Length: 246
Image (cartoon, rainbow, N blue to C red; front, side, top):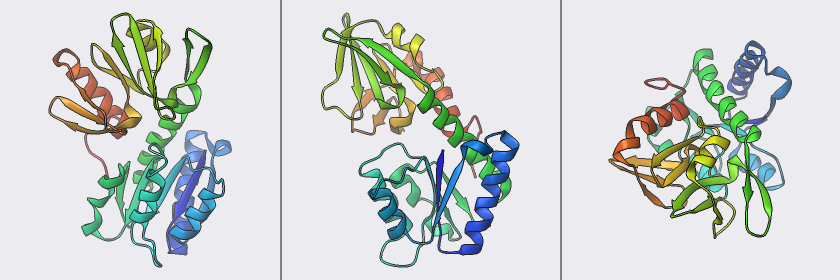
């Protein structure tokens, strides 16, 4: 996992790197973590645009130079909906801005080891789910193994199942029941919100009443029968089962 830290304070960067390192040692993931540090949003974005992989980003909202952390996050979100972003700052007035880019958490300085560990628990769990799961689709013209992370949602209509992905305008359509996907995909990452819809929680951007908004702008109804279980899974996915975050 490639974790990127971006903050203009060198002492804070070192402290944050140390806290993540302690989490990695305690959780047994030390050999699977690579940390890169940047002191400006411009440098971080330049590295990303030239191929640097970002599996998780800890980003200060207030950065010197022409680009602050929020602007950098918006550029990333323009092409990538699912990189976990944790905003860090010492200024309370920026607390709500992270919602514009679906930030995982908002952490106030000074950041505690416990707060970092809570974030890393959720980040690691998401990363593992994304990289370990896939589903085989028996399509009319091919048999396709599709990574779970590429699936945004699936819709059942009659005997047909339409799988909508992040990289195709048109869905994959094949004859299958929604139960097939539920059995093949991790129900920690996927949740049924309606008798006709199975959604990837990674791409749920907003919940309002009995509707949810997906990252591509699709609005999906939440069925009364499924709402309670869906909300429990949604909370667990985004908050790690906690009632509140840092």
